[in-house]
Amino acid sequence: MKRYLNIFFIGFILILSSCDKNFDEINTDPNRAGAETFDPNLILPNILASYAQNTTGYNGSILFQSMWTQTLASTTTGGANYYSNGDKYVASGSINSYIQNVWNNDFSNASRADQMEKLASANPELVNLQALGKMMKVLTLSFVTDIYGDIPYSEALMAEDGITQPAYDKQEVLYPAMLQDLETALSALDNSQRSPSNDPLYGGDITKWRKFGYSLMLKLAMRMVNSNPTEAQSYLAKALSGGIFENTADEAVLMMDADNFPNNNATSLRTVDDTYEVRWSKPLIDYLVSNGDPRLEISAEIPPAGLAANFDPNTVGNSDPTIQIGLPNGYDTSGGATDISNHPDFPGPTGTGDNVAKIGSYSRPTGIYRERGAPIFLLTYGEIQLLLADAAVRGYTTPATAAQHYSNGIVGGMLSMGSFGEAAVISEGDALNFAAASPLDISSTEASLEMINEQFWASTGLMGNFVETWNNWKRTGYPVLTPVSFSGNFTNGQIPLRQVYPSSEGSNNPDNFNAAVSNMGGDTWTTKMWWVK
Image (cartoon, rainbow, N blue to C red; front, side, top):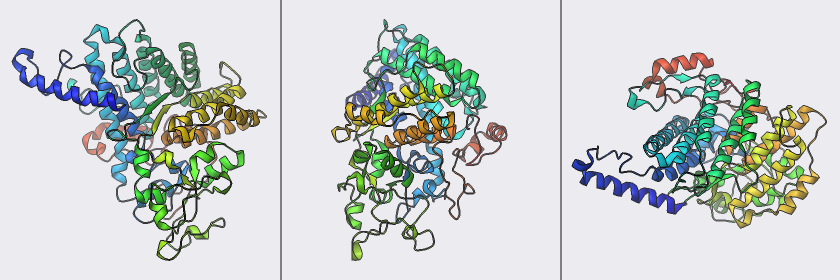
């Protein structure tokens, strides 16, 4: 990853420099290199890394979705009160900044993908890179719409054409449009043509890109099972026909560059207040413990006793699975009725004197989650198999039974943890044994859907893919979560279903913004978007 990004930055600087020196000959804007002078292959690493980073950390996911889904929890003590946004649905002072991060960053990234597509279109040899540009736009903007609801799409990224105030597309129109664009991109991929030369994800392997694209198609199709099941089944069939992930070797996992493009979840968890504050939730730890899940030992640790050790991101805790305990959401350490010490299962503070950690000996993420070069999981084989299990239960045509897809999803999710490094490796034998001992409950449709989507929740949460955890919970309602009702919350005690639009949209694009708010039925944290169950 680092090599690709270094190539991007060095190449970009040299190209701009050469444009400036040869302006009369090239007759182009020296600050805007065209296809004749700039290799669009150099843009791809930045697009991929930026997209991955935007799914993590203070861009929103660890502050909002990780705790809305009760994957993580926090008492929001001391300096890290920004976790109240997620744990208690209570706004912190910087909430407006967190709200707009995904919107601003991902529209900028979609613009880069659009420019890469346009530059590649000028060279007949770059048909594959052009297709990847379109594919990355769909990936990026699908992430945005799943967080906010209706967004600009058909008129987005068209400032050069004079459209600076784009209309918002309704999701019922937007989703088919994205899927059609994705299908167009996939149809253009050609193994006989030149491969991308700076590809940190698949090393220019067009066959793997094709599998990724069709797996993304399957995921987007499954979003629509409650709102447009006919379209969902149609695109599910197209995805299966095109060819999806066959194993964990195919999945989209980006290894990050600790120095230049770090894993932002790790950057957050290495912040001393966050190291102390962020713990695995009680629902997640209870789920892993009750199932004897082998991921518990590699994911959770009890920090050493005392405040200093709890604040130190370099300390190693006790990963014995028999002592792990999750932190309930919705508590603090203020000394009042909601103080965590009032919970009946409170394990007690740790340390003595001035070195007391009031939060108690609750399980926190292990050191694998604090490595800035840790992987970011864009889309995994395990996710796709669990979605196929869900589809099979609903009566859709799939390659295997729901039970087999469910088993594949468990095994895939466990094997994927090995991307974190040797300390996180679970052997295939152990994964298969666990799956065999935990078969899908097929006694009823709802029993199956609950089991499948609880597993999806745990798997994506343990991989730090918190927005996808939240999206799938919105789609299915599983796991069944009890909302937090904390004083001063911004949702009337409901789990948020979306992020509100950035306040700047109301002034920058007022007419289209107001139309979108009217179409959606409001701009609140609990406004129900089109595909939500």
